[in-house]
Length: 432
Image 1: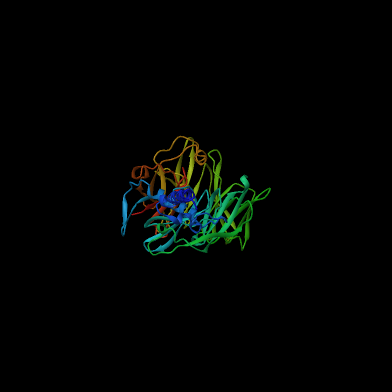
Image 2 (image 1 turned 90 degrees about the vertical axis):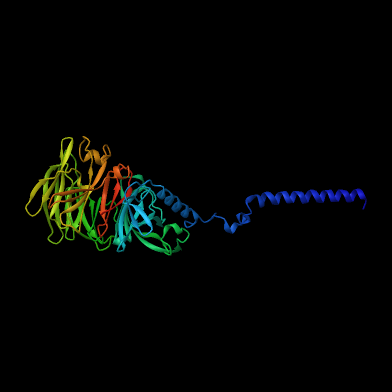
């Protein structure tokens, strides 16, 4: 081999060596030494579209991150090393419905369903974080009624963008996947089992549903061509029993006591309203209050009291019916009954969201339609001794304009929960 050929060979070898070193640097060393980034076993790509990959973790992290960014100026309370605002925003997205579940003497769960996705989340009353326990997706829900101690839910939504309403009974069931990849979602040392929703459809086009006091039975209304029919059943639709029929189709129903279902005609400022009690045991249907324009009502669990609103021109008033005497008394506070909840521990006592001001409008029509909204304070009202007390002013405590609806209490009545009608966000208030 000539000297010229040998030199040429060495030059080619050096060019190849230098090129290889440059490629190695840019592919590996310039990535911070994280060679595992090129390992397909560590990739987040899932060709089968698994719903239990890192995308769910990101959803929870984003949810939790925004939860931690809430600017709460409300008075706080201490739980061990955790300080929480007394008036607390729980969800950061619109919810379809919520329920509390007793956990310990000083701590309850609040379980709720996200309206846009149907995902289920949990918060604890004495712990700030939120966890997602089900990512089964059911979009465009407008109502979720929790039953069976919060282990199942009736999901209501419009079918195929029509006015037809579908009702789906969904049971929360454990999956084999553990949500251990989101340590911020649980208390230290606590393992969370991820759940999924499984169930069945109820009868199509149910117009109204009421839950029994224990939430272990339902009563619902269906329409025929010339009447409405009432049926009771288990929440999953089994053990049906029909025992009501009426030529009137526009009813609102509630189930205040085991044997009594309350029927109220749908309210409007220009239409007289009526309230009836259907006795399941006696099979009677009796009028309680009637011929009142714009009337909405709320019956106490012991049937001893009813609060009801009366439309009066461009405003309205609130009244109290004492059932034993049949006497009606005007209350000095003004709100709509659907902005209240009765206490089950204190007789003739309820918590209400009271508007600071009542704009001139047709009530309840304009409020239902969203033409007017309220900025509320939260009050505790004892009708026996006429003691009315403010328990919170959200606009003062937290600079929040809240129009509260769907109020409910936990079993020990140490927390009041409600949804802001303006954005369907879930809130809680620790009661003193």
